[in-house]
Amino acid sequence: MPGDNSERPILTAFSDLGLAEPILRAVAAEGYTRSTPIQSEAIPAILAGRDVLGTAQTGTGKTAAFVLPILHRLTARSDRAPRRSCHVLIITPTRELASQIGANIRAYGRYTKPTFAVVIGGARPGPQIQALAGGVDIVIATPGRLLDHVGTGAMRLDAVHTVVLDEADQMLDLGFMPAIRRIMAKVPTPRQTTLFSATMPKPIRMLADDFLNDPVEIALAPTARPVDRIQQQVMHVDHARKRGVLVDVLKGADVGRSIVFTRTKRGADRVSAHLQAAGLSAAAIHGNKSQSQRERTLAAFRGTGVQILVATDIAARGIDVDDISHVVNFELPNVPEAYVHRIGRTARAGASGAAISLCDRDERGLLADIERLIGRTLATTSGSDCSIPSIRPIAPAAVAARPVGAGVTSASEGPERKKARRPGASRRPNPRPSKPAGGPAGGGESADAGLGRVLTGSGQGPRGRRRGRASA
Image 1 (spheres, helix red, strand yellow):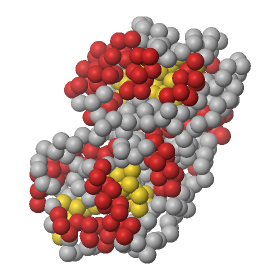
Image 2 (tube, rainbow, N blue to C red):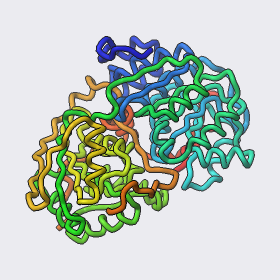
Image 3 (cartoon, one colour):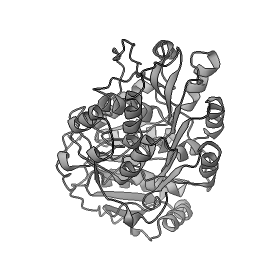
Image 4 (cartoon, rainbow, N blue to C red):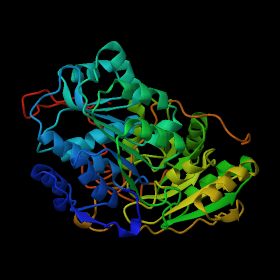
């Protein structure tokens, strides 16, 4: 149902969306009473059994938009999934996002006790196979590992009745479309299929046309325009001076928890080492890090152990952490849309933030592409004038009045794209205390930020079934 966004309700009480009482109680326990626009439109459509094609920026609450109605529909079913199978399949591009969705399911299903398993690469397959053996309600999976388990017979897809394709455009970017088509070909019909994406390029539209049946279309907000609360600036810097300018930027008085983006994994390691040598608390995260290393780094960044995260674009869709004051593009992305996703890590939950891009001579074409995409010319300065935007983040609104919704966590399962269109290119304490794990959040696909810890435990479901293990 695409249409004029201005006629859509801004916020709706969760109690008005038709969700079961135990789910409403779980949402209230997380401190939320109102839904975001994507949730207000998607939840009733999914509850009605319709396919949904949703386009909305990260940070708008897409995860809760599909998790809550899925949990509701599972409460009406008494049958258990067959061995090595599931009723609901959620496919995501990244390990961290899969684990985070599992955290949402555990939180919002606290009173309904769904069984689930998180199936991701970078983790030992044995515990995942064991979790799948008895059958579970929900499987959250990255494409590669899912196909591995299907290929060995450890998992079947013949009992799936609901499929969610989350962050579809990132799966396209990472080259997962052939795998998605192979998976979808194995899922029986009729089924309910929901596809969410931050952008809607032609291949994603084609995928939707192939696998969605008469979908309700929900398109919210221009996906190529950063939020107004982000102060954006470009600093023209010779390539050889970038690291020194970066240190000056990050030592600014108003710079708190920050993310620095590089194009390559090796570059992220080098920049992180340079910042550490300059006395700054920094760590790198990218696809060559093991899953346990990535989890430890993110935990330290959410806490007080690391103030600066140096990341490749695997993190652009999902560092789900509150109070990120600055995002710095040490190198401009080759794909202009990635700029919007990168800088969207700041100015979340009603706060303000700054995005600073260091642009050398060889990157000016990339800058022009970004400005063309976002429809504006960015304020510029030279590297010699290291004036840092003064950011005083706005305190988020009271948790009880906040809608569920804001952000996604990601670090890619697949290889990062290395193809460039143009050649060329004393430790400080964290000034902002982190939220305790499990508390309400404003930064990652609904209450995802507060629930962003990685789950590895198991328990008993309501019908005596073994709960699926959320594998790290």
